[in-house]
Image (cartoon, rainbow, N blue to C red; front, side, top):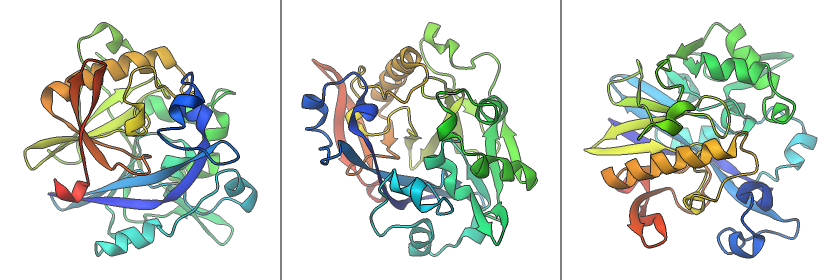
Length: 295
């Protein structure tokens, strides 16, 4: 098995929205805001080469939206999905599977591209993986979250015939994990080394890939922990649909991860790619940071 960090660029989001109830006087030291109160975040995906498959976890924002849309998010940096794949000797056509943690535009926008007046899969040889509960949540969105679920990113996947659903076992729908001692690990049919958690604080039935790699367990954090700065329990995004659920899911995950020395892979942290955890007098915090390539 080989793992590759795939950077697709940087974007900006409001700092207050990213840190919720945490005062700016505190979070601004962690990710300094610009004059518009916007902080930079990365769009970092993960590529897994294993058992003859090439699995891409999330795919960034894509490039098919109009200038007005991108103007809200201040895309910057030189990284693109195609450039990052090429750095490792791959193209989009080599991807066999696209694992979508959830269907917010900054995680799945690269799934679909414009071809003339048509919207077609960017990965023509790949199976796209979501789960039934989250697909329903995204295609029948609530008013608060609707702006994050763009139909042009989502519906063409199903129309292409390339969509499949992963099974989230019924004993957990992991919203009920609040009553359990740990989150449930779900089986994935993609490879023996890939399983996942399902969490529902940020959005319903978001999936967090869990990878066995060189004797280590790496967890792709998606938006449960968008950055290392979000490790303290109260640091919950205002974007989360169910913040108290996020709080409980974070507590369960961080406890398990610290006790088992998991490596956390961050999708949005502009500086820290991976970290391990340790217990301190203030609770669970970062122990060591590293690049994925150093593992």
